Image (cartoon, rainbow over all chains, first blue to last red):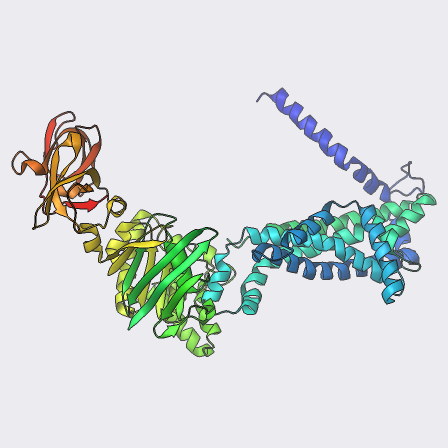
Length: 266
Length: 355
């Protein structure tokens, strides 16, 4: 390849990266801007990060979001692992096709539909069963666990699909009963996929605005909801600072998830 | 008492019977081989014995225990899997200990047994290694040690040498045979490689389409294949088809092979006049020479000779254009390609089998 052709390829690559990451780079740079104006650079400062920590509403919304994300990710991991195991290991059972289809549908369902249908479900459940009594953090966590479990199930199923089925047969052959096989062979081998699934579910939850807006109630404002509301009242550089921290956290979580997901024993 | 007693055992996959009404008794302490081409049902039969699949019909007894409906964890049987199926998250030592822990053996005794088993397969220094830190041959030996650790009544081996290099296979065969003799445990080996079965087995069963088509010692099966398929499967034989012309009381038969003429061999079973039959000519049966029985000789043209070290395999082209292999001593004079030959054999050793 000639030098000119190589330079052209790098230019195209650079354009691609710029298209993807320039907005984020601008946001990160301006989070360190001393000026309160979003468009004008007046020197380096950490004042917006300091202001962020003093913002009580923002800190409590962040705490709520993290709590919801942790709870929903944990529930989604347990349910998703069970669904993934059932799909990958039980060859034939009634409703197998329906379960697989339902999980795939959750992956591609527009968020707004998920939000509306879950809201209708919670309203109906309150009227019929009296539970959940009101919409708030609990309903958001349930909603997030619902769609995140589909992602976990997909991850688990994929991992099980390329795991030698003879491993579990060997365990049975060596005297282990099914519950023992699950504990001593299947789950240890799934651990990386489960950890990756938990982190993915956590990220999906902490990111979600649409579904949370539908199923949350008074007093339960998640971080994305608060940011969205405050942006409508005018942009503050605090949002840039918050977004920068957020990107950092999500990037770290994804990095860990990818490393765990890609880890192999052999 | 038989170690394994199988009666009318059947396993269906949809309309196809992978194992079709098999009756088989395997003796205590016997090294038994199940051989056949892929898809013949040998692995399916092994899985039924291990309890990994349930049979549709029939019974399996191990010793005096009826295990037909028993799950794998309740059978006095252990398996060496084709993929070895070593637990990747456990060390070699913990892999070997896995079955002992399940058997409720006390900890100190487990440590002793694991050390014993690893030294049995010459892997004592590798107890702490994870499977991915071991070579293919070492993994195979860990799998063997793990399956033997519980001292099963029967050890099942599913193509245990298929993933090994050729050079390693000969060694492994010899070790496996010595190990079986030393432990006295009944071994059932599944293989598609007849040489492997010949080398280690006391008796073998040749399977086809879910059925056992021949049962016997390797020598008996090799010398008297039950039919044309078995003959084709066992070794590089030339199969010459014809019609029985004459059958003598001493077993000598002459078959009419059309353009190849009338050829003589030794009947396997009883062959009726006019029946189609196949003369099995193995490379080691054939010699080059002018003398002898006219019905036990074929004219041919020399083809390519391949040097194998311990022998030379000469291709000989028959009148009908097909090429058959002749095994020559490595120092024997090798005819030049295109030279006319006369291939002769002793009709008392060349089997004639039903088509």
